[in-house]
Image (cartoon, rainbow, N blue to C red; front, side, top):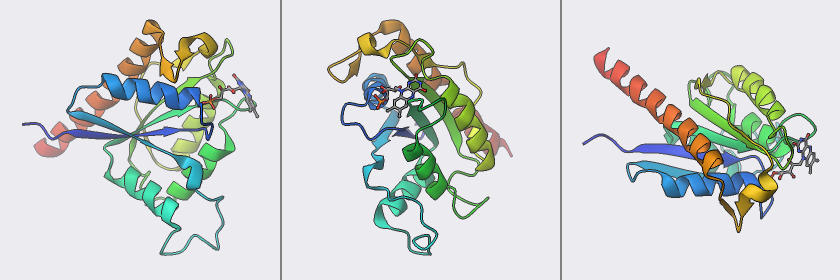
Length: 190
Ligand SMILES: Cc1cc2nc3c(=O)[nH]c(=O)nc-3n(C[C@H](O)[C@H](O)[C@H](O)COP(=O)(O)O)c2cc1C
């Protein structure tokens, strides 16, 4: 039997009613049993401080890094704040990027989507994210851009209820899963 796949979902928002987290949770409910999607909560991750960045990391940072390390891929769902990614997400990526060039983010496949009540769907945050993930040497999985616009109506009671948007989000996760599957085959063949 194929090894189950572990995906780590990170929402770039601390909001208790985050639309981005709602999308991850809805996708989670629609995945086949062999694909696990854990959603990590960034609320306890402190602001990056070099004085705290020692061999033993603060517990929430250690948990974040371990979760990334043990996941086959990371799925980021982020809002756009002032045309970029929110500080909370950048902060988490900065912690996870240490030690530089050999961090848990190195070579880690990453897929992404953005969600916004605006008509642009937060897409500008994706440009920002892609640039930063290049700096962390992560593997940006090539996939169609998923920017869920007009999310005010599409998310109700903490769930994504728009079928087209849900299909697009699940499709993106499917492309990440296929990418990880191909990598597994290639490493077995090597
Ligand atoms: C400081 C701030 C800046 C924002 N800037 C943008 C923006 O540039 N583009 C956009 O589409 N939405 C912007 N928004 C609205 C967010 O996209 C919206 O609040 C979204 O639902 C946040 O995601 P969440 O529900 O997952 O927390 C901004 C919100 C805040 C608080």
